[in-house]
Image (cartoon, rainbow, N blue to C red; front, side):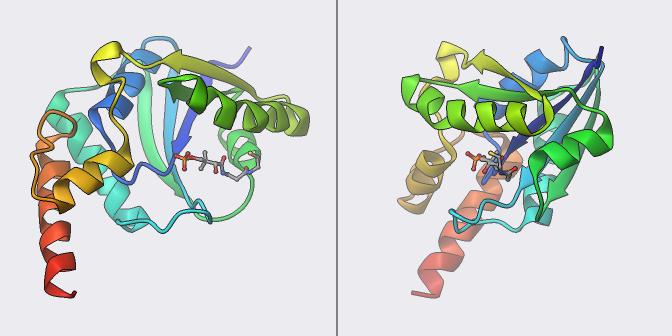
Length: 170
Ligand code: PNS
């Protein structure tokens, strides 16, 4: 039985909702690999390397650690199940807020199971974080709103400077 899990996503950027899932998954599995995956359907605000650094900074700030061994990596191409095979993971972790998230996630869960018998473990969002999404926090930051309730200080700072850069280049 594998006690290794992969938590994949765009994480553009990592929110407190994502951090909550990491914290909970780290209590169930002995190894948790957070993977910033390139999603060709999305134009990311932050580079993969920046997203990894923001995840690392957020987890440090919030004080999220073990008992699982947590690592942060990137996957720029190839199948997620091949990454799972490489690290010996038998499960993928996905957080969901509403049935809209489940409708989006279910086909991927089925395909990943068909491809490599990798199971998907769905974790319901903590109601406190039920309305947070990476797209919404980017929108709020771009319109000069405060995102401090939704993201770590490092991510809030990165969003503020990216919003300022976007305005300067318009
Ligand atoms: O945070 P996102 O953008 O909703 O995450 C989606 C992601 C990156 C997990 C998904 O696009 C994905 O699994 N990509 C990897 C490519 C892959 O393995 N595709 C085939 C099976 S779904």
